[in-house]
Image 1 (cartoon, rainbow, N blue to C red):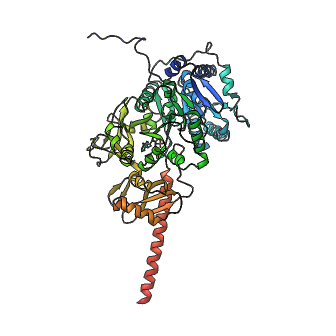
Image 2: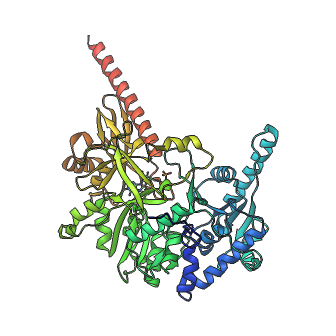
Image 3: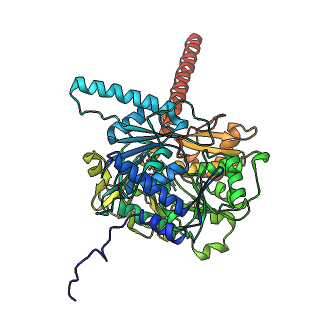
Length: 573
Ligand code: ADP
């Protein structure tokens, strides 16, 4: 066959910003965004985004410039997902739970040209900017790379009185000043151009700037809509932070399906129940910890669910016992696994019809597996990290989970070394340890750094945690390695519980439900709950520090006891 040339009509760069243009015409009068008393339609949202894009261009924000934002799940944050790339720029959503130093590091590393700040985060942003200015003075003196100070734009909230304002410009003011006839949105010329810059939360190492392409974001969005079987017009509740992998791409995805974005400022039980009931929410995403919040809500915070609510969960392993409980409440859970570098979810536990016949416990256990590659990913596997050989499909052989496909990041911004380390032999290495079951479903056993090695045996903290969650009084559980002079490491469990429960009772429950070598040697109860990141991951490094100091204390006590015994023995001689 003759080679037919590509042309402008058939070879158009893939970009998720096209979803908005389409939504404005197909779903023009449908509600796009709900926030408090505010309502927008898709026509409004499109026009507002065009105006904001034009205002950004008039401020000399141009192609590949970074625009940072520090905001919760509010309409402005949603609009910026379209408006910033429509100006040709790159969106950098910053985790609102970071401290000022980390925010300053991100602003500096990304060389942000503009910095949008929601009024709630003015103190944090002000401290970060102060830090940046002082870094800038130091860099002048030390002849380091120059530090640029971004233009600050305040995001006010009509419903909340504004305190001191940060910056000269305001979000709504920019929207009213923007004139798309003077500064038209920029056409995407190359689908490989960057659309977003997302810093990893740094659970295991220093935060790295992950760069997404328009193509990757487009494919990932479509793939998640398909895998989650999102039909037309979903009512989507923003419980997952939009700053987390762009809301696992549903910022763009809700526009693609002409859905309604229900924005809430804080992911709290009362707000979630109220929003679900008031707006008949059909879909939401969250980390498994949010399930505990829903399950433990006070009676006056609860409302009956008006319909089935489809929940896509991931970011941390969902314990089967919790999945079972949340589904009993009327939520339908789909489980996905992913990471910032994979533009959000990369594996999904795709349901098989024959599993319907199983009892609810068995169904929840199958659902807790991380699953198979999403449809637009080229491949996923578990391999020996040294030889790259695939592990046996037996549910037991451990290896590293690897991925390849167009939704994997372009690379780490200004970090060629880290990029090269993570891309090897045609794969992206996730740093997660897993197994492949006979049916081809992948199950994560741990992060490489979280595996507990006791007397030469690998213990999966995820497996121990799943058993702990099976205890009726356990609300949250995390297991980490505790140094041990004989075994090297032993599991140490940290729990948040409801009611009275003793360490012995937990150990008895474990002995009944797992191999002896996996049973935690120590159980620590944390009244204030487990330390978590804003994306719902337990901060295991903090727990490891506690476990280490417990082990040290126990060792010292043991030594003292032995010395005492020696003294007694000597005195008897
Ligand atoms: P960070 O790596 O900085 O914590 P990410 O949000 O990218 O930020 O975290 C990705 C990690 O979260 C994965 O590498 C994996 O360890 C964990 N994770 C994500 N989804 C799941 C899941 N469904 N089950 C178990 N662990 C998960």
